[in-house]
Image (cartoon, rainbow, N blue to C red; front, side, top):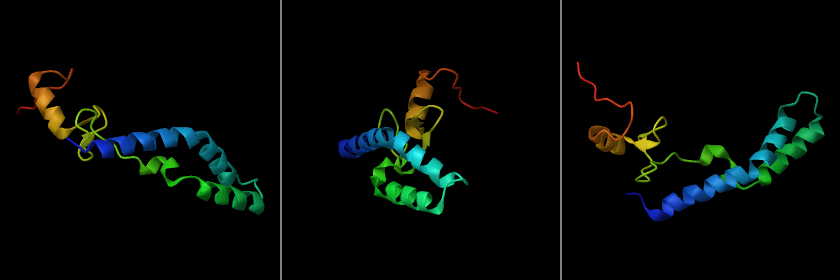
Length: 101
């Protein structure tokens, strides 16, 4: 089980990303737009840098929904490899079958 503080930190990051998502998108659009002047692009870059670091979605870490484990998390299930094995063997994950050949 992951530390509660780390899971809480990730939840806080997710809220920050959602809060600033629209503002970041507008600034990045100005920067990418070829019709924007150099001054507009510069101002947009400065404004983007002034946003909180945790407003960037890149800083988010996928965590297991059950245990909070940060590594080996499968996107399809949102679970870590350990949880997938445990609940897959019990038959709690629909469509998951143990491989045999």
